[in-house]
Length: 329
Image (cartoon, rainbow, N blue to C red):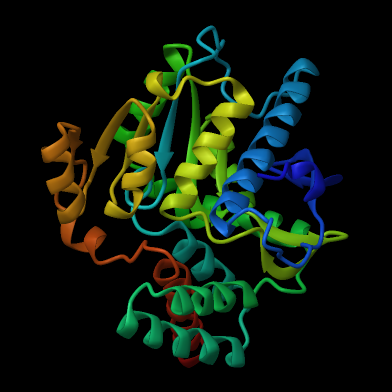
């Protein structure tokens, strides 16, 4: 597996009011010796998380720490939390897209593309060709946009639409790990910039998220590898563990979705939080703890898509519907 030194170079932009120095440079054409898209996605996400962690440490030393005010004596154990329907009610990208629509971010032709991709994806399932199409459609709305613009909007939209959707009991679990001296990372298909905002606002260590390529601070509309979903989440956790010296046997992972079984399986302790039916069954078979914090909200939560592509593309579709309704009102 090639190192990220050939894929990432340092440059300045800001997340959560703090400088984060990493920039995605253009990807080289794939060759037979290249790592798989899953490996690239995982390694890129781990590298981005590591660089953000370095920046947080520097800010903390300067007396302006954006992260949790907790010592970290246990450097080999950590916790990994999925975001959508595990930590946050609904899909974070949906909330983000809704906020973008409210700011007239989408164009009608983008919405038509989102809708067409969504219909095909939902009808055909998660075939490789369809997930690729879904990924490209999801990236279309950020291509050509400035990273700083998306980050600034992410800050605003978190305050407007996400902060009050955090599950308090899941957040308590995360903070318990912090109190025990462990580091806590979010792991999500959400763009790493937005995932990092969520982590910092909640006082967590950092986030592993989908890494989109940018050149000179402008999104190209391409990803490093693929969306951080399914096996890519497990790859990111493994890559971060190697980078940070974690013992995965001492780590814990939390998720609601059967798609995250690879991540739940790569650590010593898997926990099913607000699980879908398939994950609940697997958790029972494997003896994983099952927690359900959806009291009174199960139907609403289960109805929000969070699988690869579907969750991201549905965000665009629903955001377009929201914008259309605003124009009619």
